[in-house]
Image 1: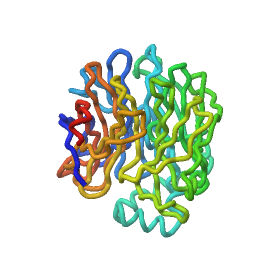
Image 2: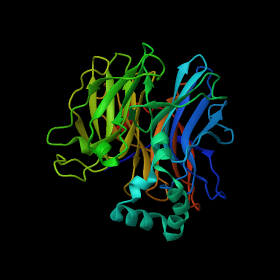
Image 3: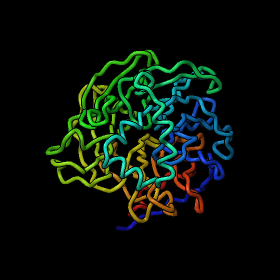
Image 4: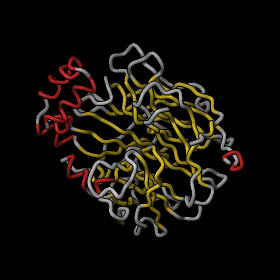
Length: 379
């Protein structure tokens, strides 16, 4: 299948090659009213899975040409993963993340064996003192999905607030000022969360309280467990588009591609949703925005060879997708993705994602600045 290379200039947001906890992943980027860029991520890790993740930020005041040193804004006794960030205006920023009990993930022998194969026995054994020191009371206090606010453009941060749902890139701010969060209900049991539906919540008080307003129906002949890690965009027309990651490892998967995406739409603020429509091209999870031109930009990771960071573009509000745009395909291995895109002041696009810098064993936060191509160049 023919691919199309985007003309992009690549850079580094955060790269700590000599740090044993220099692994960074699952970022989100936001552009503030001032033009400042802020990237939130899970950092200070030793590996893709580990018990030590922290919520970190990096800041740029020159459109991503240079970046501040990473700063940890939250660290719990658990693994803090998948950071989202959204500008709420007036200097207020919201960061979201999930704090995960790694004990829950490794107590099953098969799961433990898979982790050992992934990270190696020496790394696995280094986790044991941390995991064994955790108490159930600590886990109950910290496990879950969370947000935290800054009212001074990211300089200082308030107390964390628990949220009922979770997704890697967190909520968005709608045009009426509400927060809209499309996610999976965060349940302490990973399997219960796995089987729960994708739901839509709204908040009118910057995330202090939340109300469920809708639920996304699965695609025909599929199950709720086939879908996770959603993202959402509000178009200028008022339509909401929800994109979700598809996992086809269960029965009743409707013939979907594993690690692909599906789409749902809402015309009433998230109260009702169309059944998920399988896009049936490989790559996930999604992050979706609308460009000032009206084009809808879908960023996703591609964990097949050639490993790559990819973009899909729709010029008709999600009815059709140009799905073979390559941001870059020089990625060393499968551990990549979770790209997040913002539009800069000049109309160019800035995407942040994670992957390894060649020659390094731990992932870093990488960026690409690129221009939206015209539709004719896709043919």
